[in-house]
Image 1 (spheres, rainbow, N blue to C red):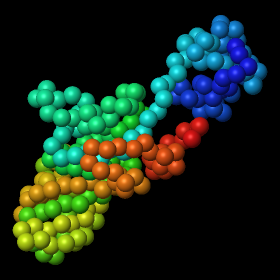
Image 2 (image 1 turned 180 degrees about the vertical axis):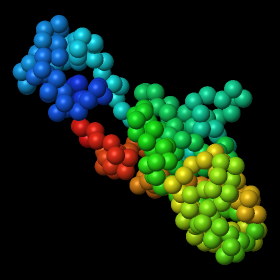
Image 3 (image 1 turned 60 degrees about the horizontal axis):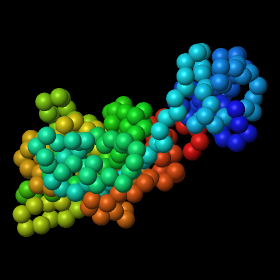
Length: 248
C-alpha cells in the first residue's frame, strides 16, 4: 500500500463492482484484501499499478479509461468495427483513440450525422434499449411533396413488419423541386426504420442526417470529425438512462 494513489473504496467502485458506499460496507465487513492482507479501516490508499486488491478472494481488475465520443459519420461508410467487403468503417475516423470503443447503435451506409461511440457498455446498452426512450433527431429528405396525411401518419405510427411504430414528431423544414426536407424526432430504432416508414407511406427516403442523440448534437462537427463528450454531457446521458456513476 502507498500514501499516494486512489482510495480503496473508490478503486472498487470505479472497477464497476458496486457503489462507493457499498464498497465501504464490504471493507468494514472484512471482505476486502490488499496484497493478501484484510483491510477493514477507511482511508486506505492504494496504487492500482502495484497493489493487488481482492474482494471475497477474487482479484479486482481496474476498468480501462472510459471514453465517450461524438462522431459526424460521413455518408458511405459502415457502422461496424470491420467490413469484410473492404468498405470504410466509422472506426477509420477515430484511430487516434487508444482505447477500444464501439458504436452506439448504427446509421445506414448512406446515412450521415451524429454517432456516439464508447467503451461504457452499460451506458451504450441503455441508450439503445427502447425502454429508456432516449430521443434521436433527424433531418430527412423524402421524394415528392407530402401533404397532411403523411405527417399525421408518422405521428400516429406506421405499421411495419415488427408492428406499429411508436409515434414520431415530424415537422416540415422546406420543400425543394423534387423533394421535401422534414425534421423527425423518434424514441425508437428499428432496423432501417425511417426508410421503411417512407416506403410504406409512399414517399421514399432519399437522405438521412442525424442531428441529435438525446442532449448531444452535431454542433461544431464536420463530416469525418469527432470530439470527446464533456463531463456534463456524460452526466446528462447517465441521468436520462437512470445510471448513477461516481467520479463524474
